[in-house]
Length: 273
Image (cartoon, rainbow, N blue to C red; front, top):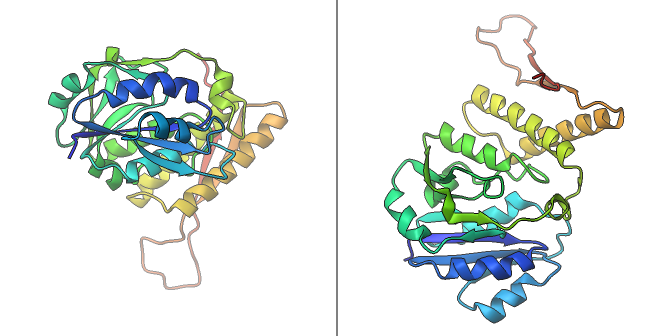
């Protein structure tokens, strides 16, 4: 059994994958998994022809890229006890495994330090810890905050962050248009507002409930956040006001025909310097 499974996803990034996959394949004591998420460039065909030892997962009929779903699919077929979830534009250094393996240990996950913008979503995690927190939240859409959300949930579960030298992960430089090409919302700041607001609401509800929320509930919350933030954006403002109803419950015995209904109010406003 290899010590680590490299998991990367590809949708419209074959030019990057041609440069980065050879470096992943060359890492010792590891396996590579590539998720072709309906890639218009035919990434799976290229991988199959050039690197038959790489484990492939093909997703079809998916015009919109859902990174969280793609990452979870790849992690689900990993065979190693440790996962390295790495974006398709990350060049992994030759000495990465030699540097990372001694740092692996129970109750920790690894991120490059210092972390660069391009490598923000790439990290190392025990497969069992990834599974225990439910992997990536598939309610997220577009880009941003799904990585932060996963790190927060790992920390909630008692898994602490540690670092490895950031020089081992180098991002291939590219423009933002490529980042959003296969997402529904092309406006990155707008997508950031939606995901930031959703993540904060979800984490508060998780703390209140004492655990994670069902995926259908998370998707309903995300849909409402998206609706409100988009409506406010059409009116020319970046703020948003949301009210979330909590489950009807009472801390004291109920003797009469009354119930206590609770609402949490969230206001997304522009932070002042």
